[in-house]
Length: 114
Length: 114
Image 1 (cartoon, rainbow over the protein chains, first blue to last red):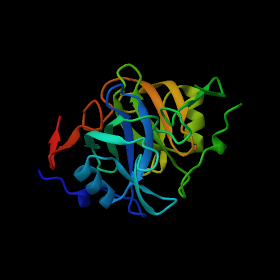
Image 2 (image 1 turned 90 degrees about the vertical axis):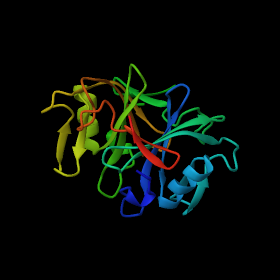
Image 3 (image 1 turned 135 degrees about the vertical axis):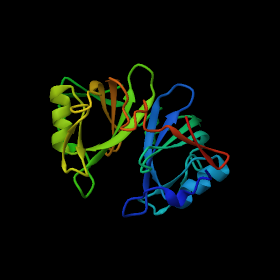
Image 4 (image 1 turned 135 degrees about the horizontal axis):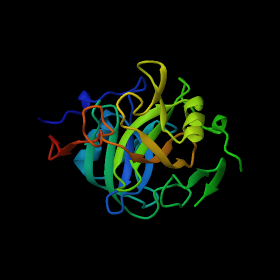
């Protein structure tokens, strides 16, 4: 069946969450949002492209930082309201310089950073 | 620093997305939503508990199906608006019976199910 970005379920702001996972290691790197045009652009270009809610603009991951995400595998969940992109991540995914945005764990009620 | 669920950033509905990842294999299993009470309950009980948007009720994963998620690692992202729970998944995570909800890929413009 041909894939049509319009068949995904977007929230009231026209956005769908996209989880980025390192294709080589399986590490979950980040979660950001896409609109239908960002979905289409990601698939067309092979460069993962989000929608920046703060800037209200396309966010081609790594366009300014060089920390690009090359698309390896694009997946849709069972109820079509969440995406999983498996990527080749260049450099850190997180704006803090960490490899993954999920560097803070909660252990025994305390926050611990990796 | 002691972790307080109130310090997370919730959306207008009081919810935060939570990504569930198989702790053993690294497979991304599903994404669902938690409110502050579900976050607290997940940490207290070690049983991953979401908030069901359709039922407007706690959703203790596997309570009826037996397909429980035992919490292994609870993580917060850099801007505190997304969670990652690494779990021991009993049985399939997806209501369809699939191991993961992300069983549909897009390859060359076509939807392909695993």
